[in-house]
Image (cartoon, rainbow, N blue to C red; front, side, top):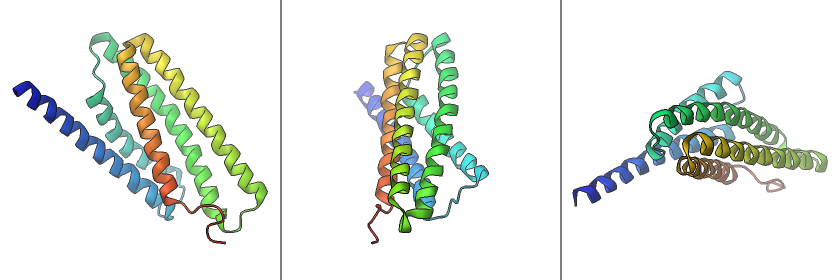
Length: 173
């Protein structure tokens, strides 16, 4: 019974950490959408560092690696985060462009935003697949699969939050 309680406690602690991270991401994205986070590179860096710190704590709760594998994992994870954050800044720029222009957006501008979004999605997929392979080699399949699962969860959550909080092209016409 004690083992089951410990497992339950760990799950609940992990679940609460995940909820806190979800709330942080949601607040950031909603604030951005409402114009509170007009793209100032310093503000974006600051918000990314806060969310990144919380995210790293959640990852540490879920992905358990030991010894040299642990050091290798965290080195790769930190490198991944640098690249992921760069893609995030590009996505924020695209969202800003959309937010500033959506009321009178032309067909060409609409197409450009969609094409840029597709490129970003492909870049993200390429990035996560690349790091899955690197982590698998350095820290094992289990850690790599956990990484892949969590990162896809975070990415899906972010995309869903954005989609729930932006005006759809043509909605105000």
